[in-house]
Image (cartoon, rainbow, N blue to C red; front, side):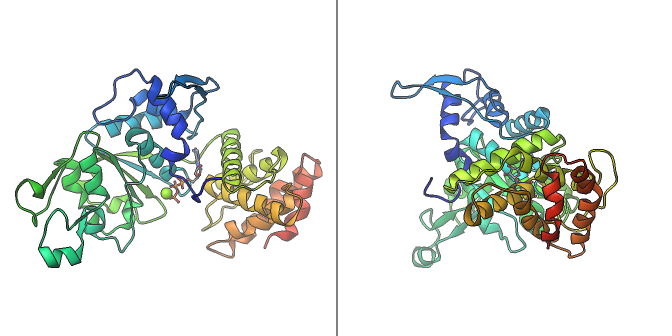
Length: 377
Ligand SMILES: Nc1ncnc2c1ncn2[C@@H]1O[C@H](COP(=O)(O)OP(=O)(O)OP(=O)(O)O)[C@@H](O)[C@H]1O
Ligand SMILES: [Mg+2]
């Protein structure tokens, strides 16, 4: 168990990044820690083949690079190409489709740090992105480099690293437009400082990954000047049920491990969980029967992971650690009806339309799941 609640990607996968760097023979774009191909392997995994490498102390290791993003490989490849170009990368899509996750892992692989990040909010100001001042020093000594408090954009440009801008469309327009000179001229000017100190030129390796959520204020409202400086990449929800099963299994397992919990989410219960999210999100069952969709609730993979984790914690704290269909049902209502109470009807109807027939055919754990519908609240 780590001493931090959540480690950033570059620390969580430090051994994988070290393995890739050790065997990476391809050319690296200026300022990059890894070649584009190695960045791709970090995100998409090395399959079952371990990488044999030797560390600085001469120790031999074999490291399998895990798959971290499921979806079209070409999406990841295009994202990597964009980051080596002079345009920023904008990942857009529905909530919970791994936009932030992908951006974190790309930044970790390319720059060795995913922490040069700003979160877009209505209250975000320009100095939280570029630079601010230590006001005590500023008043005492006037503007100087010592009194300067560099923001993530300043540090990313100076260090030739990737900066992340989460939920960019939630920031006020004038604040978003702070990025224009950074993206086109690759420079920040500090009118307060004289001479060279007042000009920060971006080192090679600098670029920007922004994310935006289609449920928030749209990217359409970004200024067209800023939009032109980004390549857009839409991240769709996971299409294949078996891939979603793998994501939820891996993520819940990892979160339980990191928290030092022991609980078992068996494959039969995992199937119930992921199938429910998948079918309600698609608005139809695997057999093609139409379903109502929640008006507000988001049935994303991220929410499925969270239901799985909570059910597992419940099982570990208050039962024998084996997650049952009842534990799932207890968590489900809260997710679906998060924003609108009437969405609870949608999930109740789902049990009648999709779960009941499977229960009647006595498939897997569906019978117990159907019986647990009284726990939806
Ligand atoms: N295609 C996918 N591949 C791997 N993991 C996924 C995928 N889709 C969702 N996930 C999982 O979902 C979780 C949440 O993803 P993340 O927070 O990055 O979503 P997001 O798109 O940024 O959502 P939001 O728009 O709400 O910010 C991640 O932990 C990730 O493991
Ligand atoms: Mg996000």
